[in-house]
Length: 470
Ligand code: C2O
Ligand code: CU
View 1: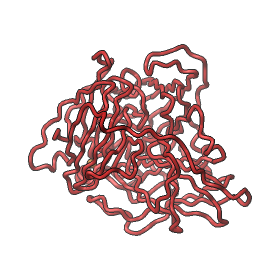
View 2 (view 1 turned 90 degrees about the horizontal axis):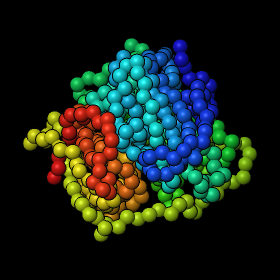
View 3 (view 1 turned 60 degrees about the vertical axis):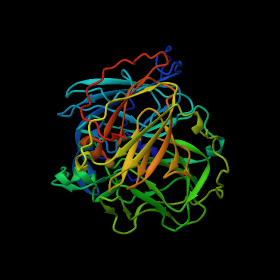
């Protein structure tokens, strides 16, 4: 029986058994981002069923390398990250490196790749300097994403910056993957009809596979890298003592300065980096509060998620004033505008037709206006190209930084600025409530290179599209 051991939630544990098959080596220049990577970092992920102990009971999951969550993949900006996926499931699967600004073509972050049972596929990614941060990986086979993610296939991915900000040098890091589950007969409870409309939430909320773990950092200034790997559960996070959370990054992108917030919503697929200054003697508890996403209100009352016990000794931690310089995109430079409406395709009365693939040009700044015309929240995610939220309901966004995943409440309208700077190829955008994406809230975008050229496949036919061009 493969199971996670030990109480510590430190990186050690995520690294344990973690695909550390390989080392680094010097390699020559490759195509892609048009830069020469200095190192190659190799990992192997074997997708296979395994029995993992969760909350004291053995559960038959789908895993990477027998671990839940999957092993940490880690590289540095400019590295060539090579990941060999071996499929030991009894169905096809593939991989997506969520949030990475890398090529979507060929054997890079190409979700149109299909890896049949018994076969393997080697992905190669080069993250350009400036695009490091907290990310994650999960299967992305259209129609099977929700089931495979629900049954356990997901893991953390960190890209370190070439020059780490001095302000964060003294911090200790903890990577926390949130995943909810309902266990029935020793397995994740199978999807039922209503789950496809509402998105599947689990009764048990796990943090790195454990219930309400207690972290014991050695330092008093802790950087928490939080990853919501749930299919549909929204986590409205706060400190149990009511003091503000200090947000330092959204979706892997550093903010200009720590932002104090009493509560922060972490939707499925989003990441949030927090800085925790442990200035007291007692533990700090992070809770999640009731949140109504239209289809579901959960939890029914505020619940603890995990706690952090300060070390006995250590200097009083000081929060940095500045973190990074954040570029502000200029809406007057927009070359192309598009509008979309999001709703469950099979709930729409007026027959949302199939959306033709969006054709865009590398080098253009686009403005996408997206409206949620439904009665439940939807989570918009665009692969490959990070964007900035310019306005919400016509009002300048209070959080204008970079994102790859955002929530829209019913009736809400957002305007996103998307610079198609690097990378040509075919990619996708979709609702990241996993069931909604599989059910058809999914669109294809093809970006052509500066000379109009197309990037190489293979590209499977993704079938049904989703949102409607407005
Ligand atoms: Cu988390 Cu289309 O991805
Ligand atoms: Cu949705």
